[in-house]
Structures are given as C-alpha cells and as structure tokens.
Image 1 (cartoon, one colour):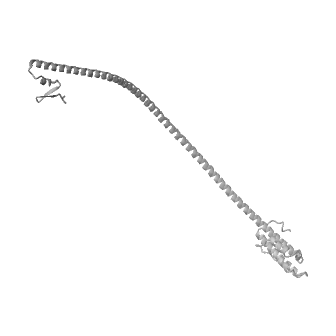
Image 2 (tube, one colour; image 1 turned 45 degrees about the horizontal axis):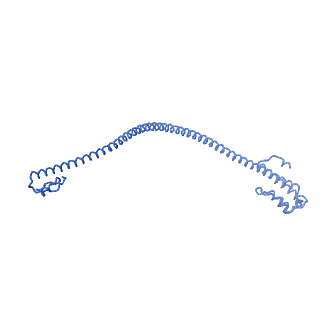
Image 3 (cartoon, helix red, strand yellow; image 1 turned 120 degrees about the vertical axis):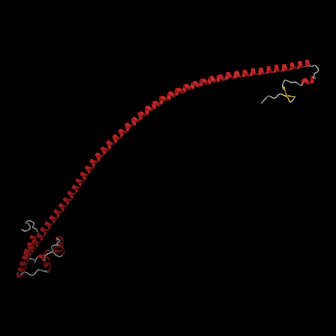
Length: 271
C-alpha cells in the first residue's frame, strides 16, 4: 500500500522493485519451507509464478486465476507475505502501465497537437496564399477594368469623331444632292417647256407642211392644167396652120407622152 502512494518511477526503479520482490520471495519461500504449514498446491504455484511483463493482461489474469479456474479458497494456503508480494508486484506493474499509458497518451496528444499545429500552419499558409492570390486577382481585375474602361473610352471617342465626320459628310452630300436635285428640276422644267414648245412647233409645222403640200398639189395641178391647155392650144394652132394634116394622127399627140427613138411613148419620170 505504501508503494502504491509513491510517485511513478522510471523503468530502472521498476527493475529494483522486481529484484527486491524476487529477493523477498526467496526469503518467504525459505520461511515457507521452514514453517510447519503445508506446501502450496499446483494452482497456488501457478498463481504465485511471476507473469511475463510483455504479455500481462489483468482482466485475463482475473478471469483465468479467479473466475475461470477456481474460487478464492485456493489462496488459503498462500502466506500473507506472498499475497503482499503479489499485490506489490501487480501494483507496481499497474503503476508502470499507467505511466506508460499516460506517456503514450501524452505522446498522442503531442502528436495530435503537432498535427493540429501543422493543419493550422497549413491553413494559415493557405489563407495567406489565398489572401495574396485574392489581392493579386483584385489588383489584376482592377487594372483590367481600368484598361477596358480606357479602351472603351478611346473607342467611344474614335466612334464619335468618325460619326461626326460622317454626319458632316452626309450633310454636305445632302446639300449637294439637294442642289443637284434643284438643278435637275430646273433642267427638267426647261426640257419639259422645250418639249411642249417643240410639240406645239411640230403641230404648227405639220399644219404648215400640210398647207404647203396642198399648195404644191394645187400648183402642180394648175401647172398640169396650164401645160395641158397650152399643149391643146398648140395642137389647135398646128391644125389651123396645117389643115391638110391627118387629124387622127394629131389626136395621138398627148402632153403626158415623150418622144423616144422617134416614137411617142408614155412619160416615165426620171429615177
């Protein structure tokens, strides 16, 4: 019991305790051999045998040594010193196991903290890189936006200048077209007037032509009549001057005939 209240010692302390326990066990065994009490049974010897340190399992020991194998009466012949040794042995083993368990748990906690710290560091590094990347992207976006706005402003200015020039050119073209249209209208009006005058003149000329043709026809008819009358008068004069001429032969004379090869033939106009 006194040993159980002491602080946990490192493994070398445990080895001393084991040696002391073995020494005490030897003395107790000697005393047991010298005493008048009977020798322990095989079950007592099995219970008194030291357990392997690496394979010790308290629950298995209790089930095997107490519950499964037999009852408490099998420790009746075990001396108080042996029971104290066993209690001390298992108490030291339990203390050392608690130390190892605590040390293992501390190592696991430290490892977990190290991993958490690593995760925190990685997270902080990720957040830092994220912040840097975000700031860089925001700066790039700002620059790109400024460049786009400048480009849009430049294109807008160029478009407005071109539009102004186009409007000026369109206005000049429109003015010129209006002037040309006015000139064309004036020319068309003049041509229309000349056409009307020409039409009127054509009508007048047609009337004049018809009148002249009528005059020509009348003159031709008059000339023909005069010619015919003159020819007939000439025939009458010939009859008067030459009464002996054959009248039938004189009747063959005609103003519309011509003399060809000494003969009277019908008159043919020259081609």
